[in-house]
Image 1: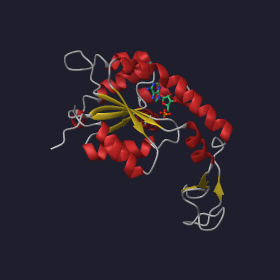
Image 2: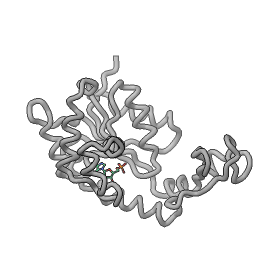
Image 3: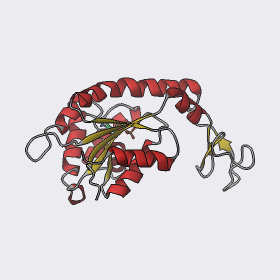
Image 4: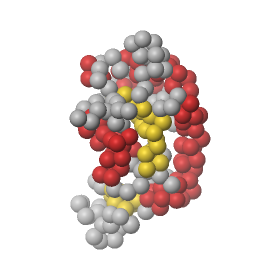
Length: 220
Ligand code: AMP
């Protein structure tokens, strides 16, 4: 039987399908998908002390204080559902956070077993995101190249008007890609140095990429 490593990090540029792939692989491996952004938003909605502390940062689109996010993750990894593994998404966002993970093991050592980097060429991302359209009424997602609506500009599901997200224009997309690359580069170097990085080709269909991710998680 194939054995998998199950203590995973996932990174991917905007539009690479990271969210879809993260939920697929966590189902395949039976591990929780721990997404720090969602956890923080949930805390804000429930008005927990953590949520109240994070709110102003999230509203400004800034990173929340590392110490708080590290504490949140350290607690979350102790839940019963996380004993066999987990996939962290949105964490670490800095070397400080990566270093905190590197001593969270039971013996005070590294907990991360593999770091998945989904790679998609910038040109393909620009094409994918600039051709994306969203229904203004029901939120259904279309693509002018790969998933066209049957009537131009009209949602198949609810007849709503299809619109383009404000940040799905070429300039914003290139800028989001640059910000992603610059912010993840030091983290990629950190894990490269520890021999934990696996690069996964994010081009192609959902199934194809899912298979590559699973193959990247096979125990050495
Ligand atoms: P996201 O959904 O990943 O874009 O995260 C939304 C917000 O949550 C960010 O703007 C940050 O304020 C906060 N956040 C999520 N993950 C982290 C992290 N690892 N470190 C600091 N702040 C984070």
